[in-house]
Length: 264
Image 1 (cartoon, rainbow, N blue to C red):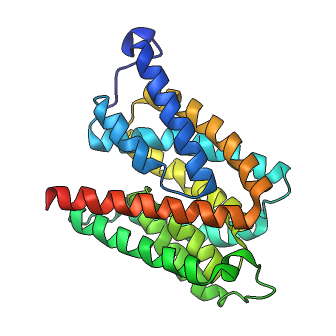
Image 2 (cartoon, rainbow, N blue to C red):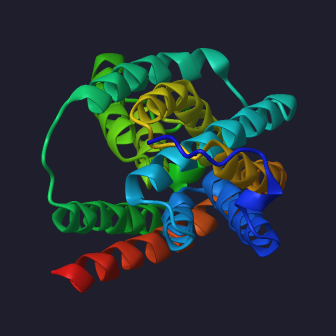
């Protein structure tokens, strides 16, 4: 059910605000520069007493507001390419709709291992072919658009279901599929997630899996993190983002593997 907690300081202890905003700042920076911040946020929200589904839904408030800030900042830095964003974002949005309504039973541990395996593959692709991620499609032509539509549709399905780690798959698709260099791909990644997150948030809300106040407090941190992350991304450029993504992939994939084997 929807959390009855209202904007009342009695609902949260003072130290809870510090914890939630603090983890939000870290997650906002990670999400803006790479992906995987939700892998840090969800365990913290559950440790604070939210059920898994409510933690997942509550996190979407922060993701949405974080990406509003991120898109705005990248636009002001003249990095955002809105026409390209809609071209890849609309198939992802349709996929997210499908992902939100398709009822499937997935083994969580197998899913974690599969995602970790894909992340490790991306890690080695970035490590062995760095120029492919740094240079734009002038040197690396994109795949046909109809293939891109299919790719982003399936990435959208994943994002509609799970969200955590979807940024890694979007970055891979935008660089290797659409031919963008990593800085622009990072900006477009945020825009695509911004497009479909409201839909996912509405579905979680209708199912009663959103703690609105906790989500807004978390969003304060995520938005601050997005401000910091966009400045770092623009200043550091594609080369810095590549190194940051490599580290983020290693950390996220290791966590997923450990979580999976903890239960297996």
